[in-house]
Image (tube, rainbow, N blue to C red; front, top):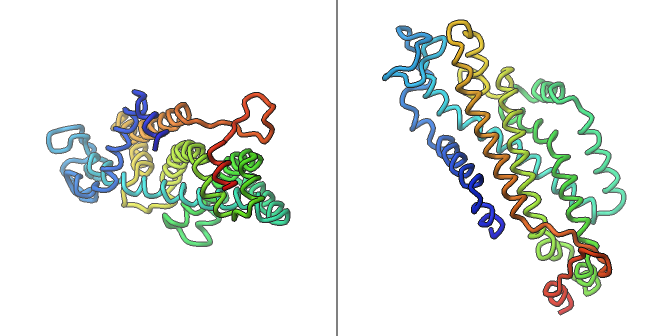
Length: 295
């Protein structure tokens, strides 16, 4: 929380927080905030430009673009959260567990992560969807697995640096359980790093989700999504050359806000490299935690 408060002092972080708050409100209350039914077709106003009745115009079958944009926020954000949540769970559990569950588990987890990194992105997602069915949850499970190596590497590297600290070794010598050490000494120190990685991964997963929606994978038409709207607008590019810029600009602004939040947290977080040797420059001495561990 202290890191987040410091990050929000930056102007870019405050602006990004406002953008993400608007997106969150649209994701939660989008179906109520949409001025018209996002699935209703108006044959009298097909491919019409912005007007009082349709602020952003209509698409190729007369559906209100603004209503579909607002209503599609929910599925776009939920899909992104599912993918990031899967990546967090798989990556952090495997990453931290690889340091404490023995060499056999460490070897198996490293080989599993290496194999995930070699998989072709689209081919793997299509294969998972083909086996489990073309649905939102199935597609997001595949994306989450592909992004889990990022969290594996980050959590493993951050925890490995802290496990070499003298206060952690002292706690182990005095009989502290691994769960207690993780909760007391490690988690609070690696959380800022995890938060930065999660914000960056959210931006990447959002782009991946919209790419799959553009291809018709995940959320099925006529349910609105930003990527699906972009694909529909490209079909009528000669009639409405400006239409694809609406969903594309929405995606770009949201991704930019997530990356700005990640940069702000990274700049504001105290991420010292803890080394067990006190003679090396830059080593951090955790005296209060060491005293607690000894006590």
